[in-house]
Image (tube, rainbow, N blue to C red):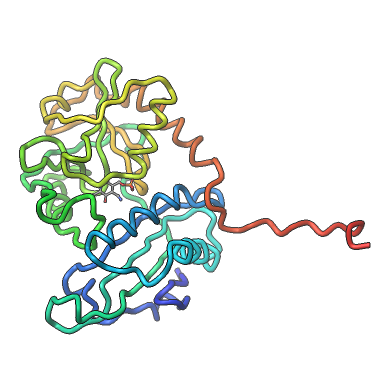
Length: 303
Ligand code: PMP
């Protein structure tokens, strides 16, 4: 692959991109990250991702050693260094190198890494046919512990759920919250449609406030679709007219079966179709541009 990876201020070949085994990101999952995406030479919703990264870091009492403007430039420069105009970007800030104890005060400088590459969560045909998913026994961790709104490096809760989906032979897992209401999936937010109303769990149900989720809500409102950020159960999903997932890596993907219950007629629905088409248009709009076009120097103006 030969990627160039940003590690603590330098771009290095991927085989040299290393962090210490004493880094508390490795030892304890102590850190935060973002998954970001670039489309057509432009990073989608970069400010929103940077804000969430800094909010997550603040919540775990960690000071990122770069300003937001510097971190923004790190993301853009990582794309440039790899000559990528369409890519998936991973920005990671860990607590940094400490000792074997967990005390973060022993980690004076957070480690900053940025990788620009690609990602594929689900097979292409599933965007047409829809995903088969299950609800899993592992519940989403509650806000009284590691709040799911923190995009932390500790994804074991999500990984446990993913393993349960893998064992069941399905593509994705729905996690319920501690009260048994629908929260989200392992790396995606969830939406349902009933009688023309688009519904998604409100953030107080314990979920990551997805950038894609927020964009889909905005898009739906612009299209005149009623949106409710609310609370619902598996039962509501079983009897929904449409269900779909959203995320930076997955984008918008339909769900056609949950716990062996076929959703409606088992085909992706019309509101999903409208939103997926609308989303593809939105990502074409210029965001944070990776490569600026060089200004044309006409011969006339030189004279
Ligand atoms: N929930 C979880 C647990 C996630 O990891 C992600 C992916 N970041 C999402 C939801 C979707 O968020 P976004 O749209 O910002 O990628």
